[in-house]
Amino acid sequence: MEAVTETHIEELPRLFKGKVRDVYEVDSDRLLLVATDRISAFDVVFSEGIPEKGKVLTRTSNKWFSMITHIPNHIISTHPERELPFLSRYPETEERAVLVKRLRRLDIECVARGYLFGSAWKEYLEKCEVCGVKLPPGMRQAERLPRPIFTPATKASSGHDENVPFEECIRILGDREIARIVKETTLEIYTWAHNLLWERGIILSDTKFEFGVDREGQVYLIDEVLTPDSSRFWSRETYQVGISPPNYDKQFIRDYLETLNWDKKPPPPPLPKEIIEKTIARYKEIERIILSL
Ligand SMILES: Nc1ncnc2c1ncn2[C@@H]1O[C@H](COP(=O)(O)OP(=O)(O)OP(=O)(O)O)[C@@H](O)[C@H]1O
Ligand SMILES: [Mg+2]
Image (cartoon, rainbow, N blue to C red; front, side, top):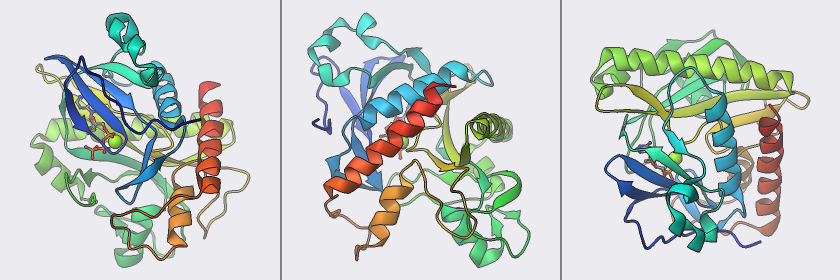
């Protein structure tokens, strides 16, 4: 199967080409988000796509959006071909496109973590705290935290995202109440999803949410939700403290890239066929579990 790495919808102006999504303007209130098969790691987009990854992300997010009742979400339609019949000319958008409310995106990545991994592990090793949250000494990589923590990161338009303390998050958002809402909602949804997946043998290590605000000031959950691009999923069976646990997410690609002599700057190295196949197999396995919730 061919990967979809580019989309061109002649009828709609393209507003933005993200690392993964192509964002089209429908009108002043609505956007069309199309998840391609592009994959990025360390903020570099690879030349190869992961066939069907965009479909997996879209179906997985849509399932979560339909289950999450904690806060309104941006979805207008998961079948945009009904509102926009010309999409039938673009079969590559099938199961990849959603029609959403166009909102003012909050420029903070809202991360919840229940385990010590990734950038949080690195920060902990340096200062025994993460985003200003003090943690017990002597913790090990991938260890469960005493309780889930909110670790916001800046959405740097160029360069890498940076973890920031909650006070800095309030300053960036410019509104203490909105900061409180996104923090509480992030932790609530994380805890709820962690418990659901735990029952199915999956550990949700951490996840990232994005939020947007409408003209009336209502906060919405936007972008993608609890997908293997935005989350770390481990198997309870093979989980082990002190290592990078076997996973159903992008960590597999990151772990592979760490074995190369690559400086994590463009141009990216080629992705071997075997790595692409193993990645999509992992994405599909976690999709199967999520769709069965
Ligand atoms: N409802 C919405 N209203 C406005 N913007 C949205 C909405 N939903 C998602 N977005 C934005 O659309 C883009 C989706 O593209 P993609 O996920 O590929 O971006 P990205 O490379 O992760 O970029 P970024 O660093 O900006 O998040 C993101 O910038 C996301 O914040
Ligand atoms: Mg994104």
